[in-house]
Figure 1 (cartoon, one colour):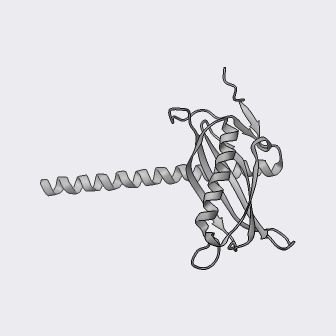
Figure 2 (cartoon, one colour):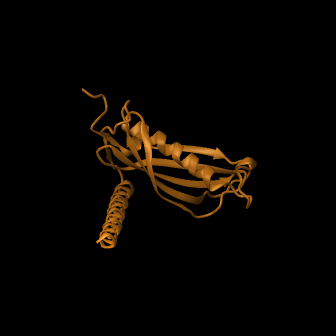
Figure 3 (cartoon, one colour):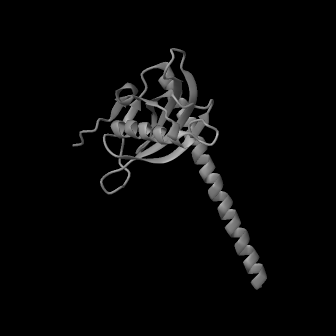
Length: 181
């Protein structure tokens, strides 16, 4: 019998991480490189996915990442992450990124939001089942609903791409048949 529960509340695996940005993380514009932020997002989301699923989980996609304001050198960047939705072996993990100055007291600024999809894997790298997430608040229920919308858009986009490629193959085949005939 598995030691992984059938479900877990959202709060059990929620995680926050703070990072003080440094000069060596800047881009050519003198602000913190978006790739640095994305790496930290993937790291914190990966921990949440592994904790929720009770083992290894790999990044399948970053559905969306919206940068609202730049991060400056010396900002303290805060990453708050939680599982928003679960399927059979996949999970959407949301990350909210805020920042404030290291040397001043002031309000945190919402820097970005990101949504990543992770797949739990076994020792052979094959997908394995995950506990279902149980939202505990109205906010968490909203996040779950929105995650389901993002999932349906992801699946619809995949189907549209497959259909487009099949159409291209059919047209190429028809053109080849016409040229040969």
